[in-house]
Image 1 (cartoon, rainbow, N blue to C red):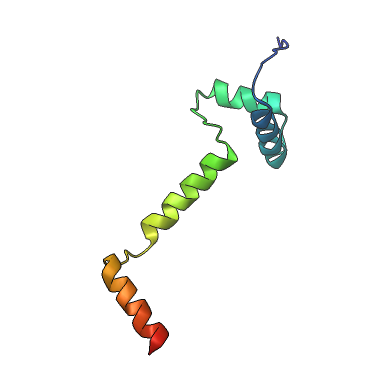
Image 2 (image 1 turned 90 degrees about the horizontal axis):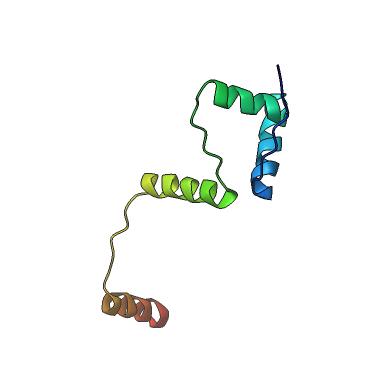
Length: 83
């Protein structure tokens, strides 16, 4: 037997859940049932968290840059500018 459940969550989580359910072609209730019923651990992330994860992946793939000391950088800049 199905019963109604009321949850209090942040508005951005509600919007995210609705978008995710719509992409899957199911209701938020059905998605909730699947997640809890399967005992999946599902972390709903904010846009900032997803952006931070993408940035970390990009940084891990990036080649390291040889760092120079400030005096050397200034000298190179001056040489380029006034050469």
